[in-house]
Image (tube, rainbow, N blue to C red; front, side, top):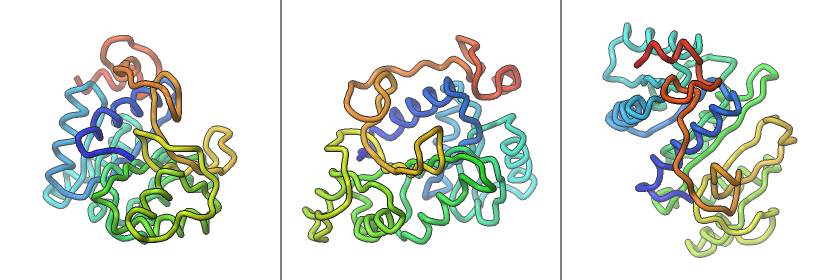
Length: 234
């Protein structure tokens, strides 16, 4: 569960953490063209190598952004769902639903961008009360896919009157985080989950710490997103 005002800080924390874990191509979905530009500019200002695609960009701009993403030169792509239609990049390691869609079929289509062709992948979704219209279908989908339904999501569904409190394993309540679909990711064994994201403590519990930016071409110079190639973006 992530309130709108917390999304940026949680996203930065996730990206900084996966940089240290050498997670590569990350596709971030937003709902509007304006947000695609705002978020990519925000990430660039934080020294994360990001670009964006949406309907207001020219065909040449979209092709350039996709090529930069595909080759790993700019391993973070912020996209609207419409602009990403037909996108076929087999090595996307992480899909993040910064804005959840209003339709569960769109959700399935988005997370299907990762874990392709036998590759590992991870999907993370930021959920809050603004997404209550999808909660019933989302829980049903998670159960059908044998994913864990987090306790906080079941509780939210009950409070919203959807009656989906029973069934599904849970990990207890969380104050920060999002639904996660572990697609053969890093020994996750296919078991999904959700919950608070803590850079220092992993998933669940723990406090929230300011992120480190090493590996993104800023200070620190560790491995991760593009190493030296990322430096050319600053």
